[in-house]
Length: 255
Image 1 (cartoon, one colour):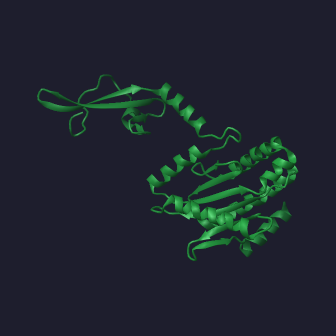
Image 2 (tube, one colour):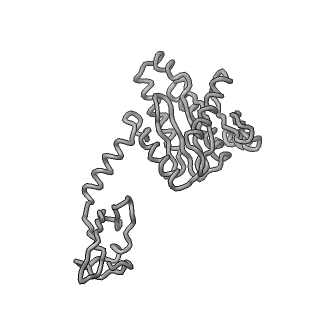
């Protein structure tokens, strides 16, 4: 290419889709089927300066690395995302300037399940809970991850806090239903906060944690959802709005 970017010469005839490559990483591009590594150097020819671009087919290496990276971002027990995936997600959210909902989720009295029913039963409960959580992810851009023994995080994109709270309330009830199926005392506490572009992520996550521990410290059964109210600067319990409550009862009766 000349310095203006115009193509002067190519070493081989290229398909049209090659000129519409999608950039995946700093120097990795794809045409939809093949992955290319792009190398650029400035050359001088006949007293003129040009950019020489070299595209190397790295499809096999790229896919192998992608597969390995995927394994490193997956929890070995539950097969859902882990803390590595969460860190990558956070970086992408901050760089892209997107908003999201953060929900910290903790299985109540999980140690008692391990102590009374055995660790194999506890692992089974975590696995089934993770399947349930993943089924409630409504978008490919959302994420649920196991970040500790019985601790999970939900990162929900393109949702208002009200919508997220309603969905998480429904999920909380599904956890109770799963406990009945597994014959285990399963319930969860969920703390929610909103992240807006320009906010400090750690602060917003701390607010979700505050909402979570507000439940632990102010209820006996801990089977509840709380959210951090930005207007009053403290956590409050989530209560299903009356119209949603009646609709929920009717849905249960019809079911």
